[in-house]
Figure 1 (tube, rainbow, N blue to C red):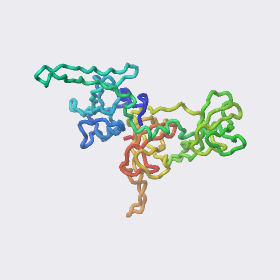
Figure 2 (cartoon, one colour):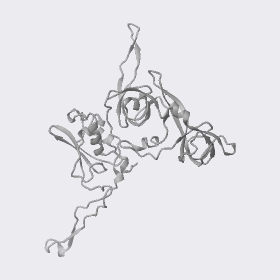
Figure 3 (tube, rainbow, N blue to C red):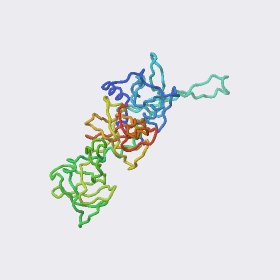
Figure 4 (cartoon, rainbow, N blue to C red):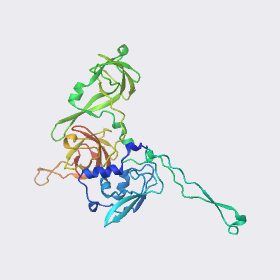
Length: 375
């Protein structure tokens, strides 16, 4: 799946954001054992995949990235580009080697270099035949082919759908009353009435959701949010009280009391700058989208930290297997077992007290209530 250029990580943005954070010096970067000296970018690669080939800590990509100013469009990485590991003043750097120009937004398309035909003197070829010599041609590569930071298909459906809702948002949300002709269960194309929506609002499109499970902190018991179960989409036909709407898309059957929330603008995959939080963070995994209690890479999970704790999109957290306590065989008393390193996750959507993250890699099965900390 290829995303538009505006949806992709820019190396320039990486460096700009890096300047705003507490950067790690290149000499602290731990190169992966058996790392290659060069790698040709393949279709389907992600920046995370490529950095994993070179570094033990893939989110430290920006610490060793070097923009090649000789490349017309150095801010994006494309299939066919060659990533080179070089050493400058004893420190590792990753640079891009590109032989073909990639178009820059707003620039005119690149014209291919003309073919040169030359006469070969008689005697050098039979009958003085013509030999065509081709100059190196410049091929324009579609800008949408630039590679993303992480697999976009893993998270795109969750960028615009409601994920969690607070108690106040739930109480203030509009709700379904009844379908036309007293129909209770609504499907695609069903017209229905709702109350609690602004009478004179200009909002035309809404998302329907149902309150799901409570998300509570496993240590403190604090209610952090409710899961919002996405049901479908609706469009306003007649504003007022009640408001008349029609279901335009349905994922699950829609029933009276189900809630409505103004639909956000279509979400594009944001720029992600993988990095560790600037301060120490500790939290827990609350739930997994797949509903399982054990899971692995590419699973989306809810975690117990959000804007309140300073979490931002792109923050990387280390997952620690939460063992809990064990009984001492001699004293017969419970004692706390240390948490064990289990993997990494990257946050892609942040709410006040809860965030959603994608598990990037795992050394062992990840479980509900496993601990999280700053790597």
